[in-house]
Length: 183
Image: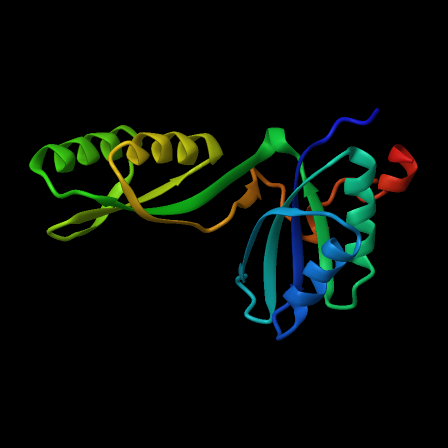
């Protein structure tokens, strides 16, 4: 039995209307659930980078990458190696802070996680955290005891450490030959 694990895919695509829909349809059409999705333009305004996280086994991850490469709007696809990848997401959390004690507790929790307080009102504080899933889930649990009013997560973004990039010049030999090694 193949082990199901989280795979992070970096996909460079045309920055134009409908591209994200085509990519998402590929996943839904094959019955894969996208666990996390983040999209933004790159240093080239004609190209967007999509970071997708999906729970699959190795064979399925390879097949997904192969299918993505067949889309005309896709420039490049790379499955990121977890050991050499930096993964982060932005979490915004609005917490009820109607008492002085609640405010102090929220400030202390934010400080523990190196989070920023980005908005203060008479009844709430809004916190911004940049971190991984465990940090986001832990702060959410702690602040949940005080009273989360609203929460939003951006989805994971990821880059490989060091000189590795999604560009053709830094690809490793046989990096995209998933069919040879997986099937």
